[in-house]
Amino acid sequence: MTRTVDLNSDSGEAFGSWSMGDDAAMMKIVSSANIACGFHAGDPLTMRSTVEAAAKNDVSIGAHVSYPDLVGFGRRFMDMTPAELSAAVLYQMGALEAICRASKTRISYVKPHGGLYNAIVHHEKQAEAVAHAVKEFGSDLPILCLPNSEIERKALTLNVPVVHEVFADRGYTPEGTLVPRTQPGAVIHDVDKVAQRVLQMATEGTVVANDGSTVTLDAQSICVHGDTPGAVAIAQKVRETLTAHDVEIRSFCA
Image (cartoon, rainbow, N blue to C red):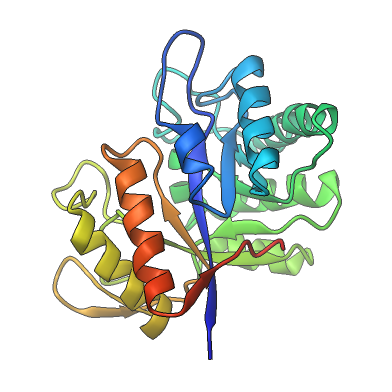
């Protein structure tokens, strides 16, 4: 039986004259694009061009919401109140939705970025704030997140659907969380190693952690970071390896 998995990438992370990644190439490989909404990266024109590229390639669009942290690329924790965070998430979703409407498409899901993504694995109040924002936005949009996380629990309590995500190019701890970027082994750059890890995730539902132990994962969507050096080559190799082993790449929103 053919297995199906979503392949997503962080996209639209340029800002003004500062470039990041190769969105045009990546849109021909992935099935979902997490588009920056201006708080960690992205600007209105970048958002629009990225949305149009996604729509042209039948790629599902996700709102890649973040802490308001352009300087830190959204990778630093911010001690925001629930009201502040919820409003910030709504603001970003609304901005991207306006761009999508102008391009005759729509947001299909939400994925928190960087520091916020990692915080709401354990931070109860911030997880609840994000879940509430998505619920208030409406449209029954799913949240892309780590399994067994606080955001998953809060979202399901509010009847907000979730989709479990795994990371192609990131190291894992024995607890099933991501190795912090400040530690060795946080990002994996070897193309062949990444592809084999992803194949194991997609077909066996496991990954080898940084201590050598085996961690069980639910690989509904696989992320290849667009800002990782060689991201396009990694994504292409991942796609080729999966399809060669009868794993179909298809958006979970399809």
